[in-house]
Image (cartoon, rainbow, N blue to C red; front, top):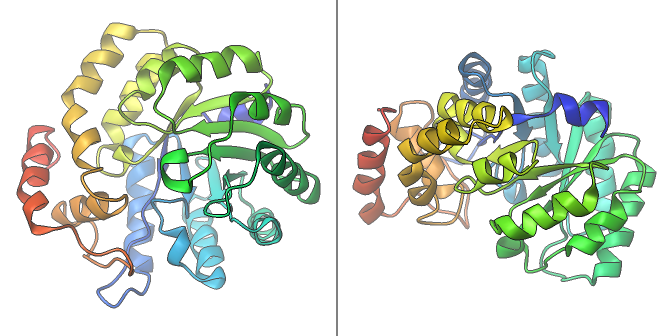
Length: 297
């Protein structure tokens, strides 16, 4: 296990990219969110992941958001840059930019839509790792990408220099356990499923790359810390208090609900980029109810 994997543990927020009504980036709100996360105990931040609307930001905006998050954090917590793409060349270009900007690591989603084979996935990640000398975290989220990186492929990639971890967003705890056991501490495993993250951490995962942490950073931090300490009863109890949030925040495609939740909290405006739209009316009151029940508003 690398030193970086030891440093990047616990609650890792996949931070939203705040926007104005016209879709332009709200830099002041982004700065405030980063400061708030550090104060609330978030252990690390992913800039421009799925939740940060990476798919609709221009290349220039993508790098600007990473740069701003790094600037505001000012080395107080590690910053991971989302640099994945379904073009290997584009992913290399983004990963190089993240390294130059001073990111601590890069998070690379499996190539979406073009559905590579397992060999294609291996060669894709190997090429990026060989091209850019920065710690890299693989990211498997088959529900969004249309491709599922098998455990065997991850285990094979664990021997490639610069690959230090994987975000497993399958939500399949037995599968995650098998991956942890198969990797045998070669690289870190991070949960990408808020609902089951505490269970996977108790089985040996190093943390949770989280959507829920956007609205409940302190609670998610405490859940992860309890699980990392092996305190199952505490982790389970704390998780139960915000269990409804894990569900309601996926009532529509992420980041639609979480951005609306942050708007309800007074943290950001309602801006979101097409083809995503603001949260549908019928979900707004249930979301507000769950935020109140969790003591957030």
